[in-house]
Length: 411
Figure 1 (tube, helix red, strand yellow):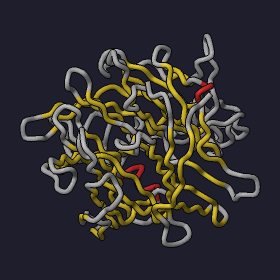
Figure 2 (tube, rainbow, N blue to C red):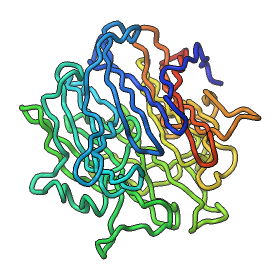
Figure 3 (cartoon, one colour):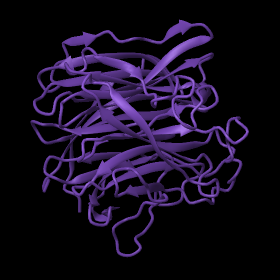
């Protein structure tokens, strides 16, 4: 049984109007100490990034007196240039603060533009995120902005979001990152065999630090599913690493839609494993409970995952679980935290803790796009959860709530 308990639940970021979603997250900016950065982002409509803000705290998030201006969406030729920041990563060896971000041109306020326009950027900071010594695009040597790596032609396909964490430093010092991407087919046109919004695969990236704080990026393998197993491909990978250097992902995929109108396709979290530093990966398989062989493949809606390594050693997974097969990839009505058996690389069902759920009588609800870290002073898990509700027909909005969760037995 889980030993977790919710200590408090507080709204920390409220959307200014209906139809918008207000995101907030925070993290530590150093390998030690309690300096933190807080990021707020307003999603002005479904997956269309709007204004954002960075604030800094030297007292473990009790106060946020320092707000730093960051570039906002701006009008350019052809539309609005928009930026969607991904998670921060503090390199445990050199202390550099790295962040990936999507940037792209939106002719209108429709999220569909991102599927062809987003290119990938990275920034590096030496002062905890206040300023950047590097702010550049991820481009493989010998490639260009228009064609940043093999298989990528901005305008025909694009990068899309990852989950958290999506960057690791391997024992040999190499950086390993994963990011979703849309695909163009053999004819050069947008590839969408499943009939959904678009089709996605996972691009593995290898990064090598240079002395000038820049990173030399190389394109690794692709992780993909066929249309027979997922109607929109596979996306939003989260990374975790075991003590022996083995790395693995948890990825989302969807059923339903035109290809699967009865939602008969099983909907799971999908797992892929690499035992050679991200050079090769196993074919994705449904992630399973640690309940014997072969283990039960649990149902999970089309939503993100999050891995969290506690200071005591335990590796946790945060995500949505359903008792029955999702319909059209949803709903996302129950959010759990569970421990991973690192010998089998499976989820321990008996450890699951229900963090939040939609109650009877509540409007349609989505518990997703969350982030989490461990408080270095209290040991509590800080979970930032945007609480999505359908405010009108097919029109959703969210405020972000901060959950403080206690746990015992970190070893």
